[in-house]
Image (cartoon, rainbow, N blue to C red; front, side):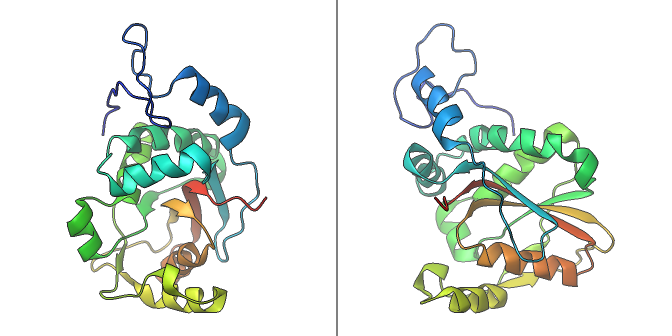
Length: 216
């Protein structure tokens, strides 16, 4: 998916100047805030994952931009979020040695309502510039309760483990996998996906997310 030009800032929605913007997607103020406020600097631990990184903190303007991306048909936001994630993977190519980029699945009903899987858009936008294969490896079990309805961490973990299944005719045995997600909150869903990929035979699984909720 190529970078799409937008005349409004992805984060604040302000009009960008007509001249001199090229393919800019942020206004100068938001560009400065990304560097000063929103870059994720925390170490992230996902059980079973070989390593985990996220580009941004899921707060403030980034939070609202992600919500528009997911729920208001702003598919072109994938280009901007992927641009924040891509350097993290590029810097780790030698260490991670990825064979495949995959992504967190969403349920068929949500896919039908939304028209797209935001994690899939991110994964494709990240994989293409690095000439890495990108394909679905997991699927969502039908009628799985939402994570937000679970009462505690143990319930979220149990619900997440039940929610995911391997896709048919998927071979990941012996591979190093990059799992792309949009937001890491408790990490329960990512952990369930990592563990399932390992059960399917992946030797290493790395999690790359657009954003994570801040532990601060």
